[in-house]
Length: 369
Image 1 (tube, one colour):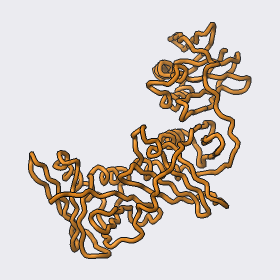
Image 2 (cartoon, rainbow, N blue to C red; image 1 turned 180 degrees about the horizontal axis):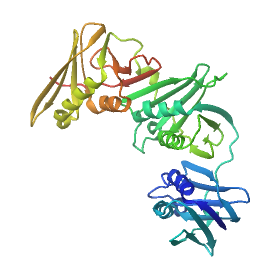
Image 3 (cartoon, rainbow, N blue to C red; image 1 turned 135 degrees about the vertical axis):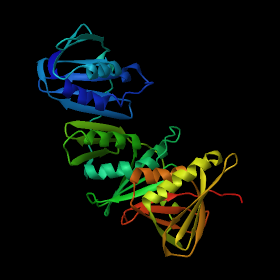
C-alpha cells in the first residue's frame, strides 16, 4: 500500500475517529484505525463495537492495500506534523510516514481482525443538522452516564405521524423535544446512545452539510447516519424505556416567568452553601417574588430574592438538587423561563419561554423542616 495525502485532510479525519477508540478495548484490534485503500477510495474506520465511524478522504493512490494501525499513536503523530503532503507506505506490516523533514515508522496489526461494519437495509429518514444540534443541546444532557443502566444512557427517538419526539432521562430529570420530521404511517421508535448523537454533532460541525440521513435496521439493531463523506454506525440500545408520559404532569397549578440570567446567578450563589447538603436548595414562590435558600451546617445560610411574574396560582414551595437546575440553565442559556409546578413532592417543569415543543421535568426532593 502506498499513497500521498495532505496532512490537514488526514488530520481532520483522524480527529473524528480517535474519539471512538476505547481506552480499555474489549479486543486489542479495537485500539486501531483501519485504513483501506482501493483503486478509487481511501477509507478510514474506527469502532468500539457500539459506535463506529467510517470516512472517505481524498489523496493520490499509488498502491492499494489495507492495514490496521494503533489509533492513538497514529493520530498523535499526524497531528504533530505541519500541514503539507505526506507519503504513507506499508511494507512487511510497518507503516512509514514521510513528510518534508520527518520520517515515522509504526508497527501495524492484522487488518483481517478488524470487525466488519454491517450492511444496512432498512427504513431511511432524514434530519436537519440543526435538529440534531438541538437534540444534543436540549436533551442529551438529561441522560445518565452510568454504564450499568444502558437504557438511561440513551435517547428515545419516536417517529410518528406528527414528526419526531426525542426523550432523555437519568431517572431524576427528563427532557422532551418535538421536532418536525418525515411523517410516518406507523410509529417507529428506537434507543440511540447519547454518545452517538454527541459524535454526530461534532462531525456535522466540520462538514458543510444541512441534512443527515438515518437508516435503521430493526433486524440488526443498528442505525447508520450519513454525514457527507462520513458514516456513523450505532448499535441501538435494547431494553424498555421508562414510561415518561406517566411522569410528566398533564396540568400545573402554579406558573411563573423568570429572568434567565438572574435565576442562574442566584442558583450559583445558593449552590456554594448547598454543597454539604447534597446540593439541595429551596425555591419559595410568592406574589411577584422568588426566595432561593440554601443551608450549610458548617458555614451558614444563603438567601437570594428575585422578582418574578406569576401567571397562574398564588404561591408554591419546592426543593431540588441545584445541579439539575444549573445544568438546564448553563446549557440552554434561556433569556426567559416558564416555571410550572403543582405540589412540593410532584415533578415540576421548566422551559424557555416561547418553546412549547420542549419540556424539562425535574423530580423534587423532600426536605425535613
